[in-house]
Amino acid sequence: MAALNRIIIDTDPGVDDVLAMLLAFAAKPEELDILLISVTYGNVEVQSCLRNVVALFHVIEKEREWRKARGQLEGFEAMLSSKPIVAVGADHPLEDEILMADYFHGIDGLAGVHTSHPHLSPSDAWKTLFQPPTAKASAEEVAEAQELAALTTSFTASQVPAHKEMLRLLKEYPRDSITIVCVGPLTNLALAAAEDPETFLKVKEVVVMGGAIDVEGNITPVAEFNTYADAVATARVFALTSPNPSSTVPPLPLKLSTLAPYPRQLSRPLKLTLFPLDVTTPHTLQRSHVSAKLDPLIKAGSPLAEWTSAFVHKTLDKMESLTRKQADIGLELHDPLPIWYMLTRSAPSWMLAPKAPEDIRVETAGQWTRGMHVIDRRSRKKGGISQQVKSPGAVDISNPMESLIIAKAAEDEGDAPGDNGGWLSLAKGNRINRIISSPGEASFGPYLLERIFG
Image 1 (tube, rainbow, N blue to C red):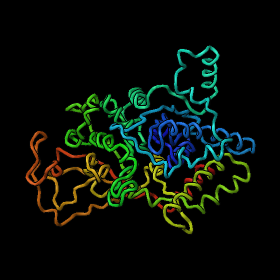
Image 2 (image 1 turned 90 degrees about the horizontal axis):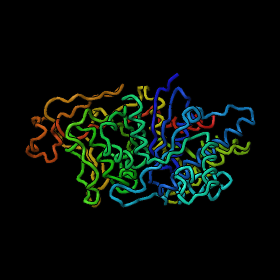
Image 3 (image 1 turned 90 degrees about the vertical axis):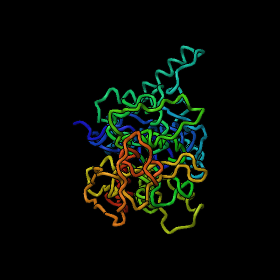
Image 4 (image 1 turned 180 degrees about the vertical axis):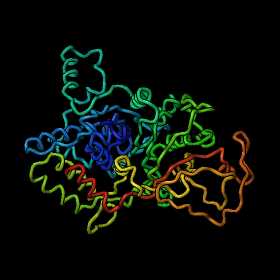
């Protein structure tokens, strides 16, 4: 049976990214076909992110051996059936100013687990998988690299940049058959879209964890980390949802003048579904649930339970050190939530904002507001009638103050009076589908543990 969803995961593996990948890998083959793990910088620098991906596969292989020896189902069927490609992408933002969250995720991105649990970390030989042998490499070294690649059964290492692997897959598969799930900065996607926008637009949907709409940010008062890390990349990807991308695409910094502008006419707009902090933050994994599920498995010898427990508990300790001691602190499951959406997207409780799609734009130049997701909160409405995407159960909440209608402006016309930026024009602005509710905030943590560990 063909998988219900064929996906690419674009990620900067820190703690919740790894939990997101575990949830995806533990799926059934008929649920997910995981084509590519596209690695980017973010929580830590890109080589540490890549190391965390390789370590994840390494620990899963150990876990499957342990389960097999106990006569249990080995699990992780989607990972095995897919044998996803792993490709390394951008190592810095488009504006070349790197930002990391190692203060939270630890210097290695996983709360120091490679140092505290070296027996569960792969040897450095994996590095040869992602780079061709040097001209000075001996025949023996080349043979060793080939043998290592042949022995790697759970993933396929690529020596091609991640954004080029994205484009290759989008070319090879039918239109509307691949969804890209993005849980890190959007630099890889922005590079792919700039290189070949029409191939990029063959994607079925881009699902993004990022932004903050009606809640505070987690890196500045108004910005969420993934967006802030490369606001220009996010703005460029969002612009592809617009009927007129030039109306929201940011000007390129001078040093990036080689990045091609989008063509004036594109075949269709991008479908983008956004998971901002507003909806992800309430979904938590409580310390008590982690202990109850993993402690017995650790005593029984589970490598995956030992590894996961180490970085989750240390991260929870770090959270308490930054805030205060709590009775049962919870880890916010930002990045796993879009994977849950991919597994259960037909559930009616996945609801869009009542007036989706929304014109959500990204601030790229503000001294204090870079990375902010901006919406028009004025009591005025767009001219004409725009078709809205309705999610099951969504209610259209009308504002009686929306009485001033601005006539529709042609694409090439200037802004209407009192509307700098074309916010009230149907020919301008982005079209973002924002998720506002899930099948259950309290149920997600236990669900995630059950899917991964049984």
